[in-house]
Image 1 (tube, one colour):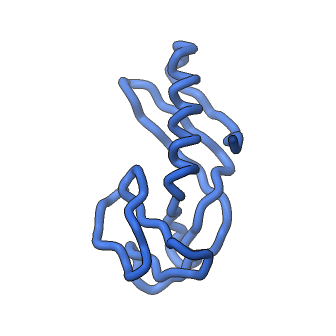
Image 2 (cartoon, helix red, strand yellow):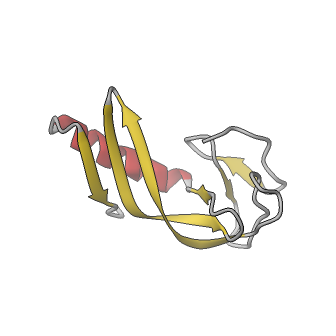
Amino acid sequence: MRREEGPPGARSGSVGCYIQDEESPMKCVICKTGETKPDTATFTVDRDGRTYVLRAVPALVCQQCHEPYFEAEVTKQVLAQVDQASRSGVDVAVLQFRAA
């Protein structure tokens, strides 16, 4: 993901995406025209030559370009699941997101 200046009312997430402090829609920082709505998205992590794909991760998703914005707490949960899968030694894992 790209790091860019966030819109007013947004703060930086753990992986460089911006998240809205409130539940209200925000303008997408990527396409500049779309607004976000709560949805789910796929979160992919490449780490040490291994790939982890988590499906159905809660996010705010731009309705125009489909860029996902993940909350910091959700990102922490995703990375915890990636750490657990990494310890198992698999090279590629497709996982279903589990909320903590």
